[in-house]
Length: 126
Image 1 (cartoon, rainbow, N blue to C red):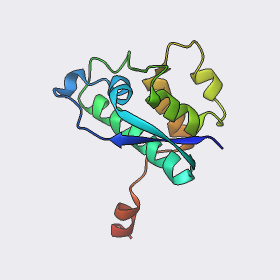
Image 2: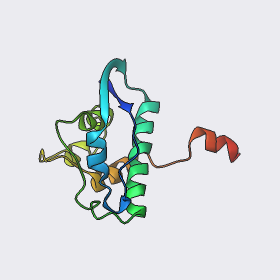
Image 3: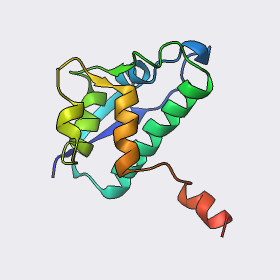
């Protein structure tokens, strides 16, 4: 199991969201590596965060959505790689070395970690 890569500080995306680039936003966040093993809860949390950022971009009809990339060499890229590289389809997603195309990343994660309500929201709806 790989090292866990976690977000140190979460900041609101720049506005207007009409130009929001989720890959760039993630690439600019501050992450850190730990020696802790990656848990399924952490994997799901990162996937849900990625889905939320995709939702923001799509809802705002962002002009940057189509070309959005998580840049290689960033800790954001390392976080996705360490959390999801064991899954079927990762190698096809991560080919080329130009980064992770955000649209494809979101679709890939949708197959393995579909969006869902938070545990708190689930409890309120039962």
